[in-house]
Length: 356
Image 1 (cartoon, helix red, strand yellow):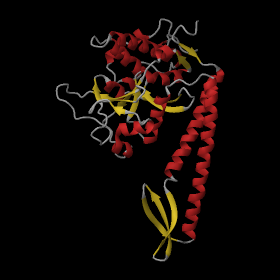
Image 2 (image 1 turned 90 degrees about the vertical axis):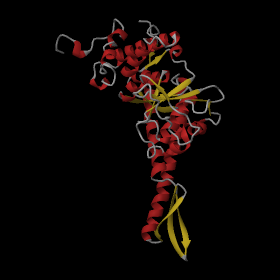
Image 3 (image 1 turned 135 degrees about the horizontal axis):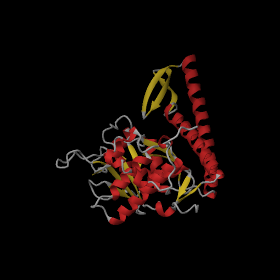
Image 4 (image 1 turned 180 degrees about the vertical axis):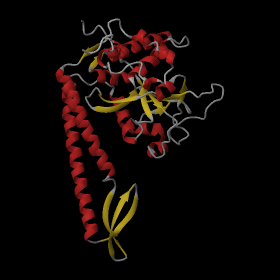
């Protein structure tokens, strides 16, 4: 079979090995940075107060006394100082290793995602927004599905100059992402690229000087007549306001999958997306809407059939009849067979004979 005919090609053994190794090092790096930012956040120092020496710990600009100098506080200070040094050294070692691995990934042509998109994803993860509050939907989700299947989708199917962030407004962010709650999504984007600006006050879209667009979207309310309260993540009045879109409730309530993807420079980022079956069915529904642009409808159908084919061929344990997909209408789930190619492998539970 022509490897380009279905719109994707399988990765070879060396590419798969490089991806797995990069994922493992990236996970170790994230754990090291999390330890550094949690256990060893802030600083610890001795201060003289009323003629006595006291140990103080600083967190988020606030100093707190841990007690007068003693064998116990001296040991506490030593553990903190030595532990932080070890954590910093481990983080630096893993960062250098990721640099080396990125060069290999570029040589293996494994980098796929636009660099700006990967930087946004890393910022979301660092802020605590990437799960379970914000998931990536739209064409960028294909980067995860191709990783799950061990293939590379044809670049013509991946072309996009934007990223859609799906916001589940049911979750309170005050404890999960206090910095973003205070500064908003635009504030987070500006940390990635200072040229990001909201395109219209009270709008859902921001863009940088290169024209890369970030859309914040959310499911439409149950009552189409009564407008909902503006749904924004940040407290700032000029932050993005999520656009309400019909049909997104299916994706919000469907299972999510997480994978490590590589940007065009070979550096990893974590991505959270809807289950590939939910994605395929939702795209099929979009392709059937008469009010949608004809060009987008054709693209929607092509993406639906592509992802459904990947699931059938490489992820046969994911059935479209899975109860986990009950967030999608039953009528839509029954359309799944129409997305599958004629030569799709038969699912195990559909066989008429036992697995002798």
